[in-house]
Image (cartoon, rainbow, N blue to C red; front, top):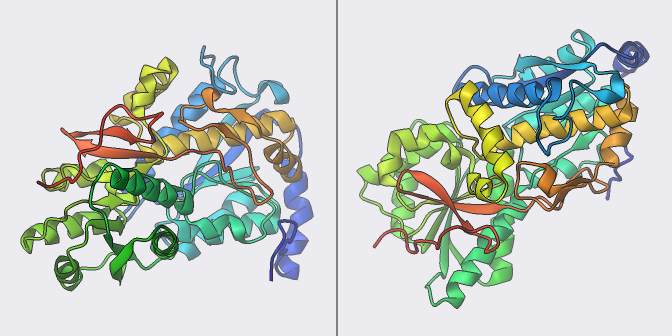
Length: 418
């Protein structure tokens, strides 16, 4: 059955009874606008959460102060549509636990009186957080979640400005096709994916694309996230010896995968990663010497600063707070707050329904972002289909953009191992 975007599940009677008071409290013209930000701030993914905080703080700083940037809300202080009201962020820790995410989202809405929520890194947590936001009619912006199924659940208050894994995987297969036309041998693929919604959705997208484009999957390994050992799985990968290994793994799993491959003497001919752990500095600090030439998909390219100097300037502000350059996650987190705050400003209200309507009406030019996107404009399911992915190759201790041609600054090194 097809579920339309207007389908709204309001939950139980008790929750429904809370709605009028929650919405009324948040509909007054404020002196500050309170936005909830929900990330893993403790546990195995804590560093992701810390970096996310710095990205959101950088965006809030640009909104609240006066900067001469071609970014929405940069010029002038605060939200002009709400009399110069400043954005105040309230951070919550979901600990990579979907049920903790559910509870924290409800707390942000009912106790902290946020008018919108942005999150969440793990797609599995985005599922529960977005359901709570839907119940309370509070807009949720999925800043960096890439599971394609997230925007297909008929939720009215769900929005995603960034690409999802079907879009990312299509960019990978476009690259494979282009390499084959250049005479490179790419026939067999090995999928390696963790067992939450992120890994499962990623693998499903890649299986479909492989069938459509004529590639043979010789190994499809689904492993338990945060597994203490990947020895058996890597032995299977080594035996399959595919032309391309395609991992969908978060940071701790990515590090363990690479270490195990080294221990067992398995050197893939090529690695095309679904971002996640393979975009994280922690992975390359730990095992970067073992994955020279790895390719990962992304949303962001710092190379864009050569064409658009503002990108480098904004990156410098983030680096001053975090000690790092923007990566695929922190750039999407930064833009997530800009997109949400822009909608609140145009809504001239902190009422959830008015913000939702403003998000629906969003049409932000790509050059007014820090991303290599055509624009930000949401379809009827809340997905931006103009968020163009890039492919990045790790070489010489840094990532360079190798695809698509209009964004590339270097030719791909292929195969990655000689």
